[in-house]
Image (tube, rainbow, N blue to C red; front, side, top):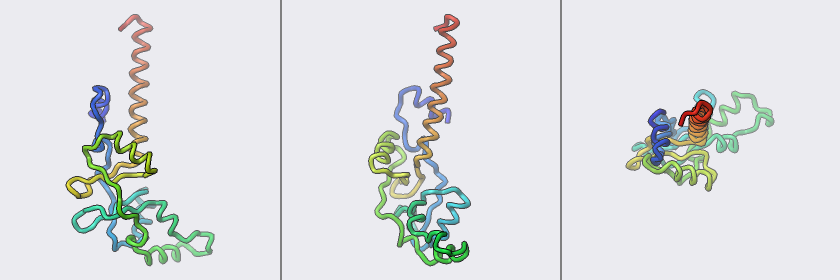
Length: 167
């Protein structure tokens, strides 16, 4: 992360690759929703790109998609029955397709603007057509926290310098 802060301090353009996550939990179209439900519960994943055999992004499944498709617990089904229903629905039936993607060398502000304007929670990151990462709202929040911390530290140091006659 120190490289990221140095890049920011020097006024250079931050890139998607600077904050993207490279350990991506991806799905196949033939997977069923119980696989994604397991990822949501065990890995705290909220977005899963759907890839083909060549790791090309063909869709996206989100936690919201899962919630919209799932049967409410108010329907009187127990957990086992809910899981059985999820096993009967394929990812291909629920995923969003086509998917907007971004390249790792794209400027971070381009990714942020795209996510904000289109209300995306994530962007799969592709290089030469293959999935190499994902950038999410959480990645931007994490970056913001680090930059705010840097600003606070630098601001505090500047105030101390002024207080003691330093430049």
